[in-house]
Amino acid sequence: MTFHDLYGLIILNSLVMGTLNDLHKISGSFSNTEKMPVLFLGHGSPMNAIEENQFVTGFRNLAKTLPQPNAILCISAHWFTKGTKVTAMEMPRTIHDFGGFPQALFDVQYPAKGSQELALETKQLLTPVEVELDEHWGLDHGSWSVIKHLYPEANVPVIQLSIDYTKSGQYHFDLAQKLSALRTKGILIVGSGNIVHNLRLVDFQNFDKDNYGYDWAIEARETINKYLLDGNFQPLIDFDKQSKAFQLAIPTPEHYLPLIYTLGLKGKSEELSLFNDKLLAGSLSMTSVKIV
Image (cartoon, helix red, strand yellow):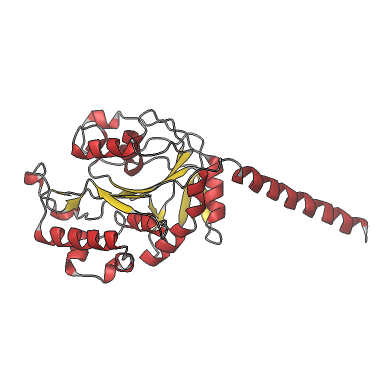
């Protein structure tokens, strides 16, 4: 063996050991826990971040049932990207990704820390999918507007995983399953969107009417809820092949796909329950899901 061969082996061994040490450090970053719940939260209007209403009460009541997580991984409807990204900054900014609302809403800050360790572990678990470690995004309102009601002191680190808009429902369901190991590391995985979400048809004159929905929204909600409670997920994964009511309820997929991530993480023996299960303004639903 020549000097150059020996030197090459030493360098290679050093790189391999360094990588293994990094992975060991990552895998040891979070203590083993009982299996954490999985959530889908219907986030609705950004005003839910500062208003007092039945849905905010639902989020707070939910928080009382949750074990304290080591960190949160959120899949929000409002980070819809080509390819897959995960936030990896130490202090994610609070993004006010909306317009036309009162200044009080823009003044809200949610100063939760990020978690580079969780970002790296998420990237590793999703292999061979290429995951970009993102240093620019932060926490959008799909994330902070609901998480702030679960953990108002912002004392739990939060990262976000983006939704690849080029992929199918089945792809996202399968991708979610790769994240299941995080649940026994104290990671609370939260999907945030709305199952019925057709902004073009919102009835603003009846926005405050309780549990008000158009006929097609009522049909879609009842059908989807039945599939959820029966554990019949395939029609939900293939949402774009379903009835006219589905198409009106899900005219674009970004608010619906976080639900698919939640369903992909459900274990065979786990129970699924619904809360905040009401329609709003004719064409929206606040239905939320807990799996435990």
